[in-house]
Image (cartoon, rainbow, N blue to C red; front, side):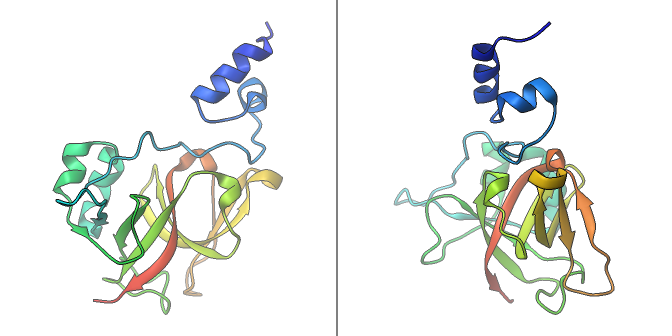
Length: 179
């Protein structure tokens, strides 16, 4: 049975993907990641959005509750000039895979990326996936081969491949705070 185009278009709109993907299951690079529903913002007394801080110890809870206002309201927040509008998160770096660029304990301020086509090869991203949260350099092969290559700056770690459907959120690195 073939689904009629108006139905395919409506389904694509609901699921933030393309009619082709719904019909064939083949990714074209135009599909969203498992897109975040309406972003929950935590605001200060002046109604300005704050940057949520996701410490290493809260990673598992964040992945499970990233759209739960009560959970997010319990996370620490920071405010930095130039980082407003609710599209930013701060993540605590753990591990040594990105040394010497990032060290354990560094905070990275990142901007939310909604669509795979917005991924810029060689840039650093925080990926919130079904398996965990990591910070890596990304090469975008979603359109050509259907996956992303993630690489560490530390040569002791080998590159890996990740499927777009494993990505829950993607955040482009913008600034580092060393504490």
